[in-house]
Image (tube, rainbow, N blue to C red; front, side):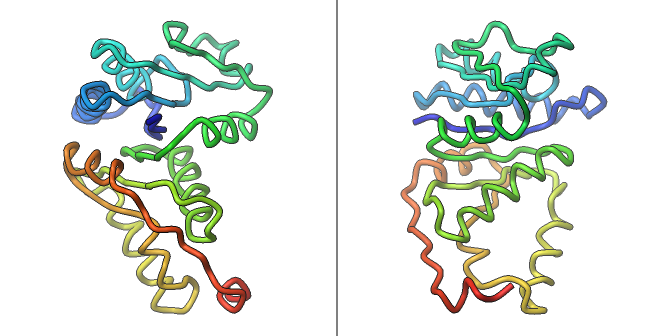
Length: 192
C-alpha cells in the first residue's frame, strides 16, 4: 500500500514534530508500505522520507517545478515526480495513494486535508483518512467542524469520513483497516 503523508515543511517547528515524522516513516517502512509525499527534503516531509528509506521502503516525492528550482526537492526519492504546478501535484499525489495520513502542519497541510476529506464525504473515494495529532494542534479544527454540524452546515457522515488518533501505532492500524464507501443521497448533495 502507498500511504500519502501530509505534513509540515516549516523549519521553525519544535523538534517533537520532526521526531513524530521520523517515527511515522519508520513504522511505514516496518509495515511494508510505500510513501507518497510532497517531495521536500526539509522539515517533517524530509524526515518521513528519510526514515522510510532507512527502513528499506520506497518513497515517491511529488513536487512542482517552482519548488524544485529553489532546491528543496528530495533528490534521494525512489521516484521524484516534477509537476507543472500545485494542482497537478495534488492530483498526482491523490492518484498514487491508497490511504492518507495527516500529521501536524500549516495551511498547506490543512488545504490537503480538506480536499481529501471533502472527497471522502462526497463518496468520490473510499480510501482511509487518518489524522495523527498527539499534541492537540487540530483540536480547534475538530471543534469548528462539530459546530458546523450542529448549525446544519455538514452532514453526519463528515465524522465517518475521517479518523483521529494520538499514536503512531493506532494511526497505521486505522490506515490498514478497510473503510466503508460513503454514498450521499441526492437529497444530501443538495444540502450545504
